[in-house]
Image (cartoon, rainbow, N blue to C red; front, side):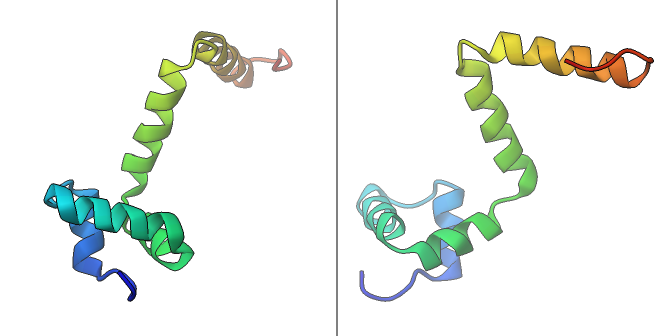
Length: 84
């Protein structure tokens, strides 16, 4: 794939609606093309990105410790205690 991906191709990639051969082509193009990766990220809704990040953190063995730190910091904002 020489040219940049179209908006439609990027949207279908996000929605996981590409056939396997096209999916592979788009995936390989995205791996090599910073311009298209940037456009792809601009099309992904923020809540989807946040959900992916949260899911990755939940699968991380240290995520429980992170969750505790976040909870403690939130509680400290509502009191005079210093956050960790």
